[in-house]
Length: 262
Length: 373
Image 1 (cartoon, rainbow over the protein chains, first blue to last red):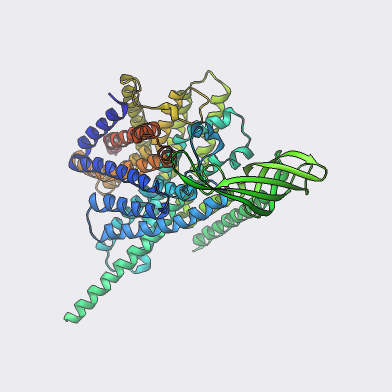
Image 2: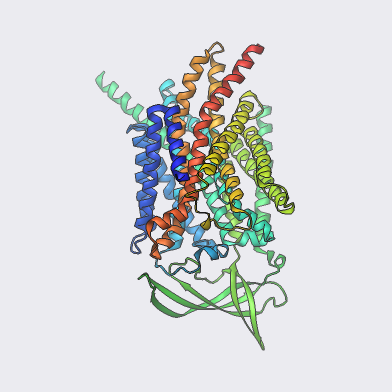
């Protein structure tokens, strides 16, 4: 049997063993997400479509699956969803500017062998595709931070409903800081592992530091890692602010209703 | 009061040092032409000479441009002289790009006819922008994360240094096995990162033990599966940048890749269980176990999807290139996705396994602490 089938079956068994019903649901959502990435790629094949727009729509779908299907539609997940989308929009803008300046789109000379014999003039904008890739790589982590902040801030608010907007914001940022370290770690190591072969290649062929830093493949990898970290850092204040704003507003509304009743 | 003022002075000093580093390094990369052996030229004039619409054999339409440029050489013997450059690029830019005035490029000088120099572009000078983004990253992390942000950056830098040093050792001494090198690396990464994330205390030690055990167990499972199926379904052909035996490099990459996620789960499990214990010292093992599994259920899905997105998305450009070149979908997917999927699935197995392993390690450490008191 195929390695992938084996690994998938083992993963499914383990998830059900550890998590029961919600484990099975996590497994299904993994395949949902995989399907979304897959379809996104198919839509990108159309040269008239804008890859950035497609990615944005894909992010909405992924957000709906991961937030609304795994959890449910409530004020927590809706706020997490809104903060994720805002962060992604800001990040997207930044990435497009940076990748145009750096000229890191497409493939590097180290990949020449892999793309040999293929037509490269395929009429798609690789700058935009590159930006989409970075966004898609980090959306999982950004959503994770957004939902953690939203649910913990709701808890905090439930226990101490008299907090001011500023204090709420502060508590949100504090929660975010605790996740910041571990989430950036998760992504850093994922990228390190993926590019181990590249690093050994650089060492084997005696690239100088100057050669490495200026090579397309290394700088695009660096930008990917840095933008992932930036996304995780950016979502913290954004999600905290939206949560604080929303929670205080509901409280004020509630107070007003109560006063009118009196 | 005095204490608070002291901390802010320290922060100010740190901030000033950082700002100074930032300015100096940016000034340096903007003027570091003389440190490169390869000639660098700055584009000062550009015209588009030709524009042709092309259609390749698969019916993809694109536009090709020929760009004529004049650039000034910034270093070496020919410094200050002008060079003629020609650049061909397509509007999709998969392997080429348009240059604008002010771009700095590495050139090779092909011919000298009298005063006229002609050359071709070999690469782009990217160091200044990489550095700029790196500084933006550092400042954002510090601004948002304060101490935790600083520790995240420090951890990242130390891990990069450790990895680079380990690879140096591996490349220099051929007889050293990559798996041994990576094993030592994983040990160091785990200890360094977890100590930085949560400090020197019992819960960190529990998380370190859990991470190492979980890594070894999931390494064994994945190796066993690959051994039983003799690697059936993994297409190593498309694994790029190979100068070494691919199988070991793949396995080593797989384990470094899932390490971050495993650590994430391990520290979350142990810090929440220790928090429960701190709140109620008489809490029963059974209660700890139930809450531990609940916490595990919550984080399992999100962390596996973080890994999935990080791995799968990276292969999109290559997949698009394959499909646009009329490759059958099944072939393109198995060529480009098999290794990434294997990585993501193996990482997922590691994550899920860490939940019970982390749970029992934390309970063991808590019981030990309880017995001591």
